[in-house]
Image (cartoon, rainbow, N blue to C red; front, side, top):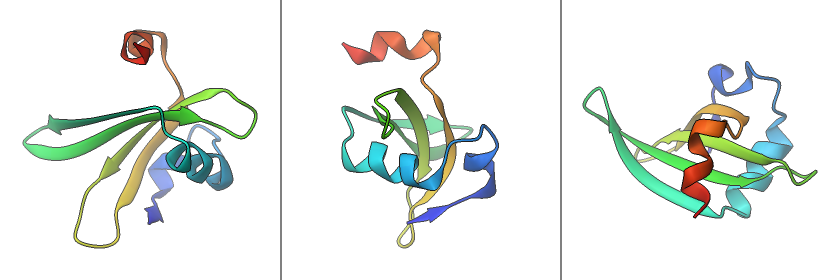
Length: 78
């Protein structure tokens, strides 16, 4: 797994990104501008929910977005 610079621009640490992926609670496949994306919600090490966007590829999968879960995405929690 590769964490792109763009995933770090909101100040989320790599360890929190990996923790959220390991402990994910929501997974959704989406298409954005004709390209496949994976949207994940999972907890950071301190329990805050993170939203992540990954680009699936043969290898490595790239994390391109990581941020605190935005209110517009709360509905995805169930």
